[in-house]
Length: 570
Image (cartoon, rainbow, N blue to C red; front, side, top):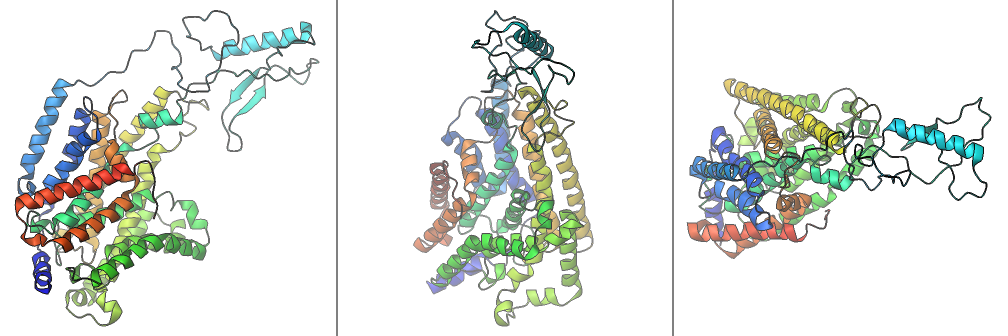
C-alpha cells in the first residue's frame, strides 16, 4: 500500500495548471446548463430532470469532455435553442380594463362594507375616497339616529398612514375634530380595504424575496467542488485541472477561492456595519465558538488521514492543515478586523490586506522559504496553510462587500419606492425586484471588468497566480471569476425566467443542495475517502471511472434531496 501511496502522491504532484480561458470554458458548462434547464423546465419538471440538466453536465465538463468542453457547451446550447423554438415564453394574462389596483392574493382582503351589488368597474375594491365618504356618512347617521340596542356599531372612519419603526400600522381619526361636540364613534371589527400585497409565501414563489441566481451559483459551485474532489483521483480527470504545485491557474484552484468568496457573500448580514459597534473581544469569542464545528471537522479529517495510509499532498496546505481549518478561521479573521469597519469599507480592508501580503511575499524572504522544502517546527510544517490565511481572509472580505450589494436586492422597499407609504401590489413588487436585479447585473459587470483588468496588470508586472500562497493575483482572479459568474446567472434569470414563467428559477434539486451545503460537502468528503481506501482509483479505466463518478454524483444529489425538508447546522 505504501508504494501505491507514493505513486498516488506523485500522480497529483508538480501540476503546472491550465489557462484562465480553459478554466472559464469548463465553468461555462454550468451557465449553459442553467439556460437549458430554464427552457426544459417549461415542459418537464422532476428531480431527475434537474439532475440531468444541471448536475450531469458539470460532471461531464470536468471528465470526459474536459478537452472538448466547447463541444459540450455547443450541444447544450443547441438543445436549448430547440426548446426555445418549441416552447414560447409564457405571457402574463391581460388585466381587466378599468381595474385601478391589482387583485390581491392576501388573506387580509377586506369584506365589502355593505351587502349591495358590486360594481364591475372596481371588482370589489373601492377607491379610498369612496371608503372615506361612506364612513363619514355612517358616522353621522349613527350619532343622530342610531338605536342604543343596535347590534351593528357604526364604523369609525380611519385613514391608513405609512408604517413607522415603532408600530406596524398607524391610523388617524378623520371623522372627528377638537371643535366637534359629537362623540367619537365606537370601533368596529370590520376592516378597511388595504392595498394588495401578496403573502410572503407567494412573494417567495415569484422570487421577490429570494435570490434564485444566488442559490444556483452557490449550488453549482458546490457541485463542481464535489465532483472535482473525487474525480481528481481518477485518470479521467485531466491533470491540468488539479491544484497547481506552486504557480498557475486550474479549476480546483479557483474552486477553493470560490468557496471562501461564497461564504463571504452569505455572511454579509452577520458582518453588517452595526456589528462594528459591538464589543470586540466578545464578538471574536463568539466567532470562534461558531467556527468550532468546522474546526472539529478539520481535526477529524486530520485524524482519519494520519490514521491510514491515505495519499497526501503536503505542499497543498501543509502537514496538519486542511481546508476545514481555513474555512473555519476566515470568519474569525474578519471579526478581528471589525473595528476597522467603522472607518473603511470591506473592499478597502480586503485590498489592503492582500496588498500588504503581496508586498511581504515579494520584498522579503518569505516566498523563498515557502517554496523551499524546509519545515522547521509546527509552524513550518503548516507554512502553506498559515501563509495563505491573509489571502483567503481578503477573499472573504471582498465576498462580504459583494454580499452587501447582492443581498440588497431582497431588502424591503425604501420610502421613495413604496408609493408614498402605501403597500405595494404584487405587480409593483415584481417590477421593483426586476429593476433592482438589473441594476445589480450592471454593477457586477463593472466589478468583473475592473478585476479582470487588474489580473491582466498583475501578469504584465510579472506576478503570477499562486493558490499555494493565496497571493494578490489569486485574490483578484477569484473576485473576477465569481463576479462574472454571478452576473451571468443573474442575466439568465432575468432573460429566461420572466414573472409569468411556470418554471421555478432555482431548480428544486439545487435548492436542496444549497439548503444543507456544508452537510452535503461533508458527506462528499466521506464518500471520497471511502472510495479511495476501497480501490486503487489511479488505475481505473474510463468506463469504471465514469460509472463510479456518476453513481457518486447521483448518490450525493439523492442525499441532498432526501434531507431537503430539514436544515441541518453543524
